[in-house]
Length: 483
Image 1 (cartoon, rainbow, N blue to C red):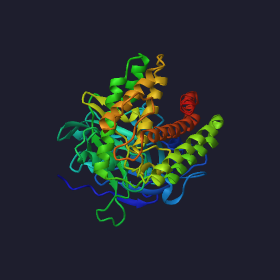
Image 2: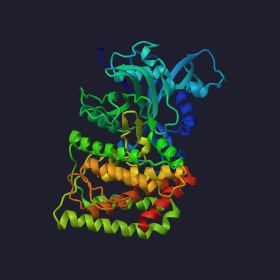
Image 3: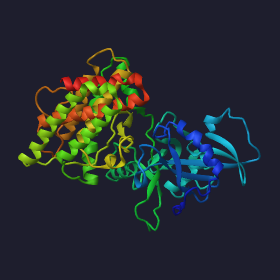
Image 4: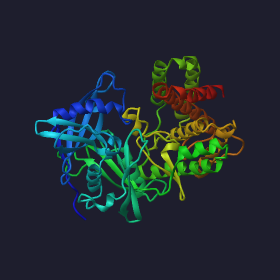
């Protein structure tokens, strides 16, 4: 196998003409993966990266600066891979712009250059692939890229299907280009790699990653990750699309939901073994984060005002119970690595069952929150909310569809966790985690609070991006507070 190709990292806008950067100003905010509203945002060149052996390919890492955005090490950084092709003269032919990833053509001091989005260009795919798996795709037209295509519809990143990529289990890979770059090892690299080393088959197998070398790192942890490569799950169906299809037919999703619950329980168990436990939950800090998030949601969405008192009362009740468990009773509520943004769209269903993917955490949360150890119940809450969304989007006419799917998911989760409880439970009951001192009543109350927290996050998202859907999470908030 060939040695890894060393990436060349330069500060600022090296290798990028000012005209290219100006061209990006109008193009960037229109991209689905652009992480913030564009008003007042300035793109500051931070680093540029080149890949030896791949001509005319440059990665621009741009810091986003503007009102309300963090500065310095906490600032948002976006990855903009660019293929820069010398051109005889500017062209106005943009008929095939989307397919080619054409951004535009500019005249620079060194000549006319056509600029393409690397997320849609084979030259960029070759560079990422050859770095993630040294020895592959070393020449233009390499066989590993036969049939390669960008996956449409993804919002936060860019994924490329590689059906011809060989590996020790056959063929097929998925290259994910991370559009928002975080400093340090990326969770969507670290967690799948750990789960793959642990031998768990509930995740697409990790095949490699593109790390940005830190200055004077000498092989230490990367400064950041740019891309991740995983095994292709053949003939898979997106979990949310599958659930919506069932809901549209009013078809029982219980069996599939129970299977998914078992896989999520296995995920939590393997994560705990592979990455180790986190610290014990500290009630004041934990509840402080929930209250802060709620306050931010109230400030953003006026329609939430009638629920302020009910949410405050629920959070007060949870705080009192957690304090009693950890202080008065001397119990410990352990935290651990979790998925962090678990919903049906983060799961694939194939002939071999469910696979869980996308371990980045909620994209609107601060990085430190997304990667911190947490309660497995947060993932449970996320999946329960997603089943509710599937019922609404799939337009299930049976009012029991969502509740039955949620109960089935919880039952599958409990059985696989070894925490099955006797008696009848409702949609938020009984998800105490293995090794926890939580009693069932406390776990139920905590899960209600986490469902509300997730629904508030959804309300803000829908308010900003899909107002016609805002009734879905608003109704969920009302339902939980009334229960």
